[in-house]
Image (cartoon, rainbow, N blue to C red):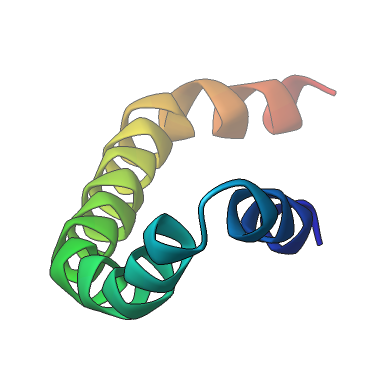
Length: 65
């Protein structure tokens, strides 16, 4: 909703810039999509490594409790 209001303000102040932003937004989103997917994959890999590293401590904690 905030992006829409910002676009409306830009449209009122400078409508050619707002039209260019409206056209370029999907193109920029498509260009940045692989980087988002890479970030999700790296985050998942780091979570997996963290789980493997902390597994012995968590299993020992459950055995002593």
